[in-house]
Length: 382
Image (cartoon, rainbow, N blue to C red; front, side):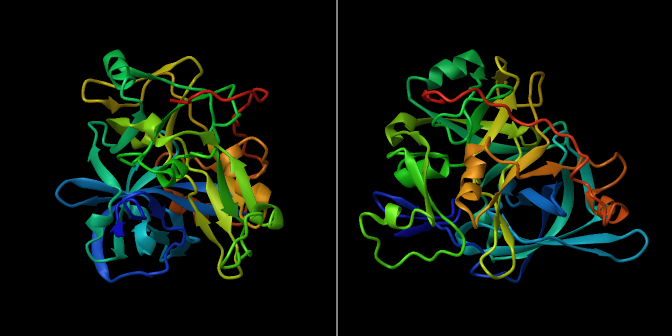
């Protein structure tokens, strides 16, 4: 069994086993300079700074996918200086301490996020834990290297067309059809070979995945009827049924990070400090208005373009309940969302935090939500 620090997993000849426990190895002592792309989101009675990606220069630019994170700690040092400390969990159970100031602000991005220079403290040889390559676009924005997986016969059709046809299926993919947006799906995983890989991108060979609620510890040995025995503790969630052979080929692309849809969030409360997880860390998607294609250029780069569709919210799932576990997959049957704060020009989310402290920033903020057609049988979302 070998460990893959890029993709948070152990690998055997027949399966990939992804780590489900985060941050247990703690924070290391190596120091790095980098960048963080993040957003300020508001829930009912609380706010979060949510990390989208970290960026690191090492023989070229690389990006790191956050898997989980703790509550942010903001400190106002004087009349002008504000600092944020954020614990970010990454691959193979390592944790990073990320620190950035309001004066480290680099750019406002069109998805409502901001880019900051930051200091990162963590594991030695952090570049080997990078999720993938990145580069700076001529617009000054970071571009991620991502992959679209499909059949070998479909690859030349997509490449020759110069675009992706976006589809109406949501993340769960089994029966949910969207009405006011269509998506093209991508992943940092460079190959889909096992059922474990499929489950990371919202699919499985059996057409289901199992999710355990917070506060429940399963016994060491599960009997065949365990799903019925523990039906109040383990959720069997329908997802798109697929075989790895249907994702045998891939197209490598460079995608403007500001074109990607916001990641949904899990809120964990297992008796200790509350923490947050990005349950779809290996699923990235770009939304368009229905019927619009997503164009890429000769370099296979996807830029900001006419017809993109962005939403200013993310679903937040309460992991103490089965409904909360399902929410980021289902996307429809939930009223629990985090709303993106678009920071006024000339300011930063760190300044905004103190300027608007102790105010209700959720209730009066109107955001467009995804809308769904009545359910019907799923087709192949590729």
